[in-house]
Length: 432
Image (cartoon, rainbow, N blue to C red; front, side, top):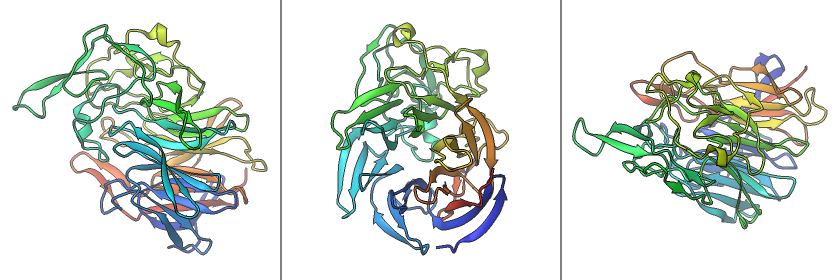
């Protein structure tokens, strides 16, 4: 473990190292008394841990293992009611409660998976309910060979998407090489279908629960699961504003797979019950057939859903992040802070060339968003590799930033990652 040492100065204070040698951590939570818990994802990179685990951080800088063998990827750890709520996108996904005595029980089970994305973080609302996001199984509604490129998946066939509203399909099918056939063979795959399967035009698919690309909620014990909103591709960061509004960061679709799309930004949405958020046919209210979203790795897009009017007007975004920054988790600055009530958002950064053709680096930083006008302001970057979570200390009010560690994509080698390079930082001497 590291001693507390000063790091690079920033425009809003300086970063001080609190803990290092973490292996691909994804989640940070702090109890009401100020006890820090860190969840390691367990993703299969480098020599990382084979499964998710949770650490308790002591004031001395040492840490204590709270739970291991939780499955992978562990995407969320939340403190509530003197317990930890851990979300794991395993096969299947689940949410587990860990009590102070170490006892564990699964409260939500059989969540969709495996796929491109998973069950993400949990948060408790003013109504006492447990809210959580569930990512999509695919990039844009159709299973493609890009599953082999995803370092955390590398699995085909994998599960198809499950709609949260009744949908009618246009019958669009995507063509890809057939990995199970002879060289040169191709195969057709339709939307919301198994790999190699298609649906005729006009096919009706009923809503199901649990579903993918959605926000759901339940009681703290996992009972009474219900849909909040559908059409949010991968709502990785989730949280409530002081006024009770639920906010989510939605990671935009990529220029990859059998239905690629170009230059899609990450979006910030207010989650409103019963609304459709557009995926897989709209981006923040704009149709995917707009020339602005023409991919470099495929043909112009066609719709896969034919009942848009039935689904309702797709929701507009509160804010749009620059493309490829990978907006992840956020927290709201507490009262007494210079920017009380404003959002601080971690930007994990691009995953080129997997998600898009080669281009400049993006993200790997933190931004502040002012909810009075949803304007976005740079805060700071290095020495962060891949910021992934942000939490304000409930006692001191200081901001803590969790860094995933060294992780890049290489055109030839794929994932290039280094275990034990994750870290936790504290912002000190914060000014204006």
